[in-house]
Image (cartoon, rainbow, N blue to C red; front, side, top):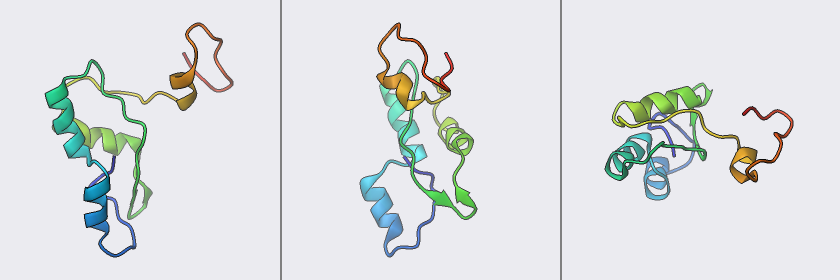
Length: 93
């Protein structure tokens, strides 16, 4: 997923982005149709003019259109963690 504000110094960047990635607004439209219990996104890409685009900005862009529940992204370890296993260093539950 990427923000429309992302930039990259390569030819045809916008064409590449649109062909191989989903924008925040496209994700919001898909989620509105799918109506998930909670929308979780974890694979974001792109840099803005001032560096990496903050997670909070991506969330705001999605919430302009998506009216369902969305929130904190899970840490990768918590996705793969077996139920009932103790937390790993740095994880919060």
